[in-house]
Image 1 (cartoon, one colour):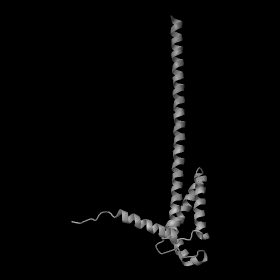
Image 2: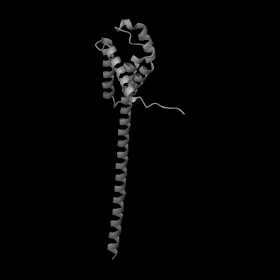
Image 3: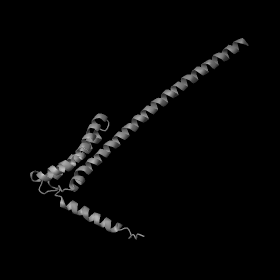
Image 4: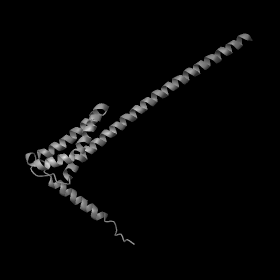
Length: 163
């Protein structure tokens, strides 16, 4: 029988928090390279929200975003070999932690925002179509009802003239 120790959630939480703080303090946030990455993600987010109604452009941006995530391993290898030309320290380790946190993670979040925009637009289109179908059905029912009323009135008038 296996004996399980209590879940070390407090140790995990404190260890994770310490790792997160270490990561935060290891980055030179005032570095133009880092600020450029952050600005790129902010601009991409604003662009996605701005073009959310244009499905073709949104699809193109969404595809570009996922392509950049796909290429992040290659970009990490290239950046590791050439970091001296654009950064003050080598952020690009073999495991790609920096790329995952500051490149792929925000790109995936922006991609998720794009998917949400697709869903909202699809739902809006579906609602508009269903409303149009409902209005058409109601007008057809009203027209049928008017014709039935006219027939009833004509039948009643004919019966009234016979008496």
